[in-house]
View 1 (cartoon, chains in turn yellow, green):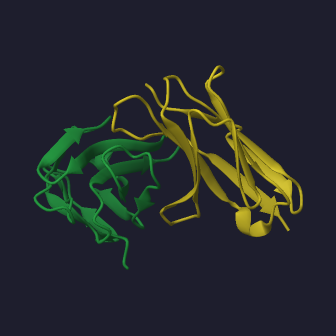
View 2 (tube, chains in turn yellow, blue; view 1 turned 180 degrees about the horizontal axis):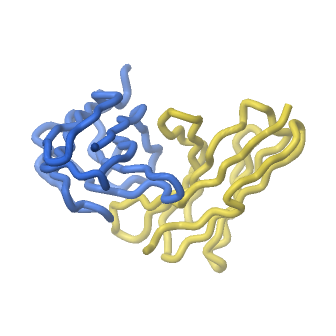
Amino acid sequence: SQQGEEDPQALSIQEGENATMNCSYKTSINNLQWYRQNSGRGLVHLILIRSNEREKHSGRLRVTLDTSKKSSSLLITASRAADTASYFCAYTGGANSKLTFGKGITLSVRP
Amino acid sequence: NAGVTQTPKFQVLKTGQSMTLQCAQDMNHEYMSWYRQDPGMGLRLIHYSVGAGITDQGEVPNGYNVSRSTTEDFPLRLLSAAPSQTSVYFCASSYGRIPGNTIYFGEGSWLTVV
């Protein structure tokens, strides 16, 4: 399977702390994206990083990409209870039109 | 702007029945796709389309059919439902033929096959 792998599978932190989630993949990629899914809802796009980029910021989110290690990390700073959700990485590679998702990370932020 | 609309939201089927999950987007996106989401498995691609008249298989296509007669619609057909198809189904779309842009997801369709 070419499916990506996130770790940890579950993360529980206190409000105000930072949350770091990692994603590893197996193929060369064009870009990598992170999505959030609240319980019972669809996925919402958070941020996209292209293969020639190493770091990207969006508000409290910081994404890094290390193509040599085939890995990416998502950092959420100053977490809030509303950040409680599942987070997925997803990527495309080469001329392939398929977007491959990881299995997801469940983040719980305790008030 | 409705985005990606999926219907129905919930459905219970008996084994062997057929049904169609509807998906429509109003953003003039070329790329549309169907995923299923199962516990511990993340999202797995069933079928996708890069434009009207063009469809291709994803990771888990068996038991499903799709067609893309218009840019807006991308229905997913279950030919003969099986309990293994109990899942949450998501339709998604994006601008362009390769999803290098933001993917927009529908709210999901919960399907139970008994």
